[in-house]
Amino acid sequence: MPRTFWFIFAAMLVPWLCMNLWTAPRIEELAGGLRLLEMRPGGYSLDDAKDFVAALGDEGAAHYLDVQLPLDMIFPPLLGAVLFLCYRWLFPGLPGLIIGTVSLTYIVADYLENAAVAAMLRAGADDLTLHMATTANRWTLAKWSLSLVGLVTLMIGILLRLRRRRFPESPDRQQARPGPRI
Image 1 (tube, one colour):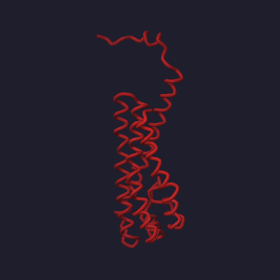
Image 2 (spheres, helix red, strand yellow):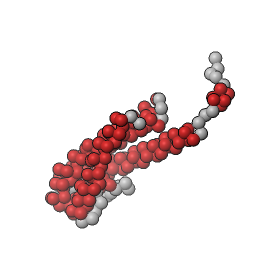
Image 3 (spheres, one colour):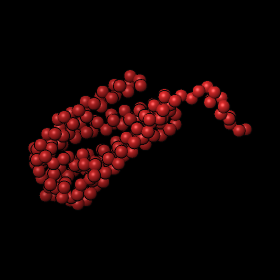
Image 4 (spheres, one colour):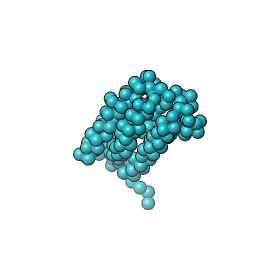
């Protein structure tokens, strides 16, 4: 991998570590142990969203909006860049370009989820509507679904790369292949 990859990877780790070791645990502590809405791969209901926002309180909502959200706006494009470069390396040529580009849809889903969750926090538990919770939940489910597809694709790419490394094609097999028909 080129140096650019490792630089972007290191830059991606900074917000990831901040969110996972500092902001998310603090928010969950302020919410009485409830898991962040965006960290629920199975989604959540209106009641779940209201319970979380109510338990979070003003201090927790402020911490989310002022600290967690800015970090979560930096993280997705950095992760997207890391994945894009990985896919380009694992799947050379056009397939890597296509897979890498499609993988960037995760960023859109994550940003829309962030905006929807922020809107719920700003509204407060009493003014949180079914439409707000449903919209946020859909973006959360989309983000996790796209993440799963991306992870599976990454694992397939790694396995194919390991297979090519372990079982390289011999020159005899390469010559034995029929050429293109004219």
